[in-house]
Image (cartoon, rainbow over all chains, first blue to last red):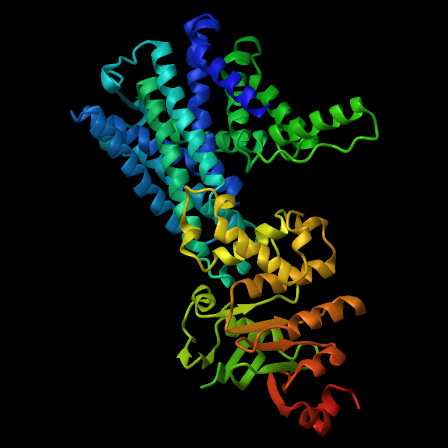
Length: 323
Length: 245
């Protein structure tokens, strides 16, 4: 059952450019995938490590800026991509060392401060970042000689990276390290007493999270061929966090659903509703009231209840499907 | 050589001296009971020994190895395990996963982000065995949230024993248990091999006195009386502070 659903979803995703109609919607789908990768990366910290951060747009932005700067300095796309990801991991390490001095609110506030520093650099260090005008690149990369200039080509390339992200997350979650990370979230004292290095576990999780945020940032650069200080603003971090929380923290599908929801509102609903921000806000309020655990776990709970009700009161609700 | 030795240990929270020049020497294989009224500093002493809090002064030795400055997580690797007075389990996970995390804590496998944890046959078998040992084998797949208080107490002990410790610190293992459950846990503790040195904090005198060979009485952070069961029970100071006579 699960396999059929998975194969169906995969088929729909692969054939999307053929049935969705025009290239505008293909581009919207590409954006969804990019933000889903960001949200998946962020979920490692927010969901599995229990560390809420409001500075992830900075990591996303570092990758985009570093990539653009390296490309414009005349380096090839491979050097630029590797350099951008290394830069993101280095910045993640700095963020982690500083922010992991605290947990809870302290951690959030430090990530906000670090994110604002990144925004300040993007906005004010004009010789490095070109300030408010942002940085553009002339062309998308040609991996294995394939052009990514058309909307479907970029979509498929993004889809491949997205699937890699999903697979890496599902492996990570089921691994001993994933279990250690969740243990450190739930009982840090006990984990220390059991012999775990809680700080190092969180630090490594931060790097893993930063890596995928950087991958998303790089794809964002290829998609837009432009990056500006807006990319690293606090509101961008908040938006990514909302995707994770709305979809369901600590689940594999939640961040993806959250990213789809936000992009649908931003890019599609905004064409029909001028005050789309208001509608998005209302949707978030509804989610918090009726499905505080997020869309995906909440939706599953409702489905189970409906199925149980349809089968009659005697049946026991199905066991948790361990997403 | 002593299994666990504490020398001139001091700790104050602000102006409150919770541990005041405490000396303690526990022989290998010994069963030591620590008693004292509420606020005597018993759990604080455990927290100092496990490294959760740092002493102001004094030294601690584990089998002759100075652990005073060794971080808490390393002390687990040196053979020190504890249980908690307030049950400290992973509430959303199954009993099996709780014990698995305990086993994993001492294994390099804990850093592995690629393999599937539930396919690690040796790890899983070890965790099941630890649960069987405390009589919870049949509840392995049950989440902690759906177990009774008495069962959770036994999971606490299973997690500590799973690490195969040399020194085991039990912080009120009988707290909140029914008479029947107490007997079960007592049987369980009495069955622990003499390779393990046990230090226990306990209020329940009936079960605890039966267990103890040596007893230390703490009062306001100080060791007041120390000696064999008979010596301590007969000592006028014990009766005065603890037994309330």
